[in-house]
Length: 161
Image 1 (cartoon, helix red, strand yellow):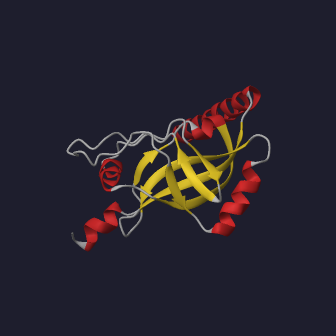
Image 2: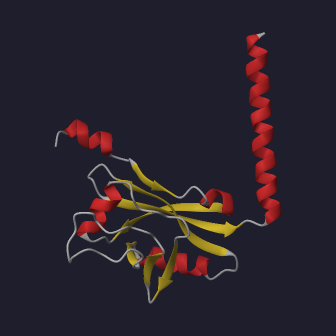
């Protein structure tokens, strides 16, 4: 593969969790590697993975990604993977301890925001430390977004006159 083709794929979003910013207030983001099987990598690179309802959890000193839907590889055989299996995330031990302390606080969660390719073709996960939004927070976000739209429309229409 040529260098130009590799750089075009680099940083490419494979899957995005669109509901995460709606359901949670994102406090902090971090990058983690993900341990995938061969057939899983092929499916993820095709953009067929789903992050809806997925979360990360610290268990026995390791970080695991749960409820990520990666369907079986179409051309796979008996070595195909389980769709919703738990996948290990690759993060430094010091970072895992810090994330465990954050996760144990009430209302905090580790949510995957997106799966993407690095410049070297490695699949990575962007995790976020989040706090769940209440119904009032969601309404406030919607009001703010609508107000921003109205101001941008007013500015655009003012420029046309």
